[in-house]
Length: 308
Image 1 (cartoon, rainbow, N blue to C red):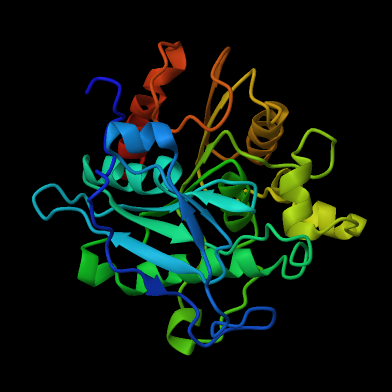
Image 2: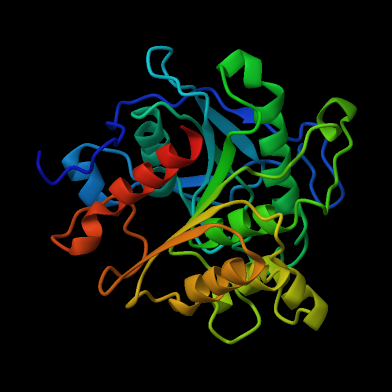
């Protein structure tokens, strides 16, 4: 049992009932399209008896809600964006595991199953859509603040890898708003804090991740699109406090975190960054006998310090 990661869901576990975020649709997204999501679970996780699902062909955005228990609810919330190169989602390792992790110290948590673009014919077809999905999720959480015992000014966003890119876009592009529902449009989509875990950030320097860029923007994006979706180029003093975590040997160059951290510092935004010598990419909370294994403790300390 010692090799089973903390906070995982057993194979026979049950997810909360998700909410479809855009039943009305928007340009470039048809909610009536068949959602032929393909869900797989790695054999090693199957043998160990827990879920580590990867979701491909996610075509409808959903929000999964994990309210904090009343006994330890501290009034804060975190929206979690799993990674997967905008082509698939590491739904448990970078999603539901962390929802339960945040629940353990009083945060309500929400997992965003955003759309993915694995098929070449879909790549670059709706680059603004994922930002709209993250913004809609933040607004929905704010609209339910009383229901979940959440303070409207204590709602953060967190992302891993490509999900980190989405979270960074939400943290820097909150004035770029597209919200048709009047009851939600009056609520801000700006997150109050942000955590980026081995994130893809830049599309400008050659230090980003070509697969993530291609899935979001297509094979030949215009220079203005590359800049628009490079969060380090869009940092202002209004960007929320940020936590960054990455390993120097990551397959996504560590310069992604460094560029964003330096942009935050230049803008006077509070930022905490942890760079480890070893760790690679895509580890979530998996323990491998490395110093980086304890990084979730640093995240918990940072998050609690912000909201208490």
